[in-house]
Length: 267
Figure 1 (cartoon, rainbow, N blue to C red):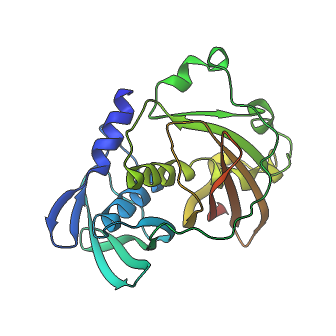
Figure 2: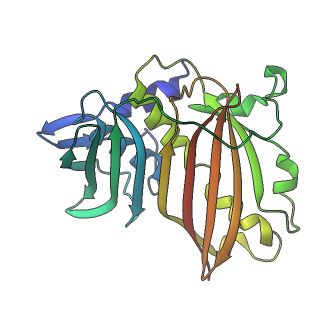
């Protein structure tokens, strides 16, 4: 396990403060605002710590204020409901007495039922020899297909495909795998909406931030095996970009879906 992945897994093992109350810390060296994927993953872990025997199947979160890396975040969990099959939790992440993120998450007992899914796009994961060394020095290894085109200064179709996996094995904790998937799902979404207007704006003059994020966990998933993130952006308007992604396992199963709207304000 890479040292940055070890650190991330350690940060997801939240410190219990009281019943339904947890404290989360941040990666060493974080200087600007906190990464939204980290706060979502920690919020999901805090909610999951109050649920027995049920796996997360969806979450819906709102980013309310930038997170300050100088101080910990306190996660307050409300046990909204425990039914026969489903449990609902509401989480508020707080710094200096103010909410920076809120999330509703739902958990379900595993059940058998009808199944169907969209077909995975044709694609192969990168060979180890094709991975640049700089991609190997992070908690996740993420390889974007056609990376050069997405960096050009001309408009591009607002679509991306990214293969990713953790930089090492992470055991069998289902909640941890879901939280790590939530963490990585926040990467590459917001920038997808910008592709349609590449070269038409000065990136330094754009204020960008995630506004909300939703995840659906369709099937059990392992994040330490290759996953394909198929991303597209159907619309951008009113200084906001709407993005969505489908996540497939190497054997073609659709394991999760994500949607996010982000701020794209030109100043």
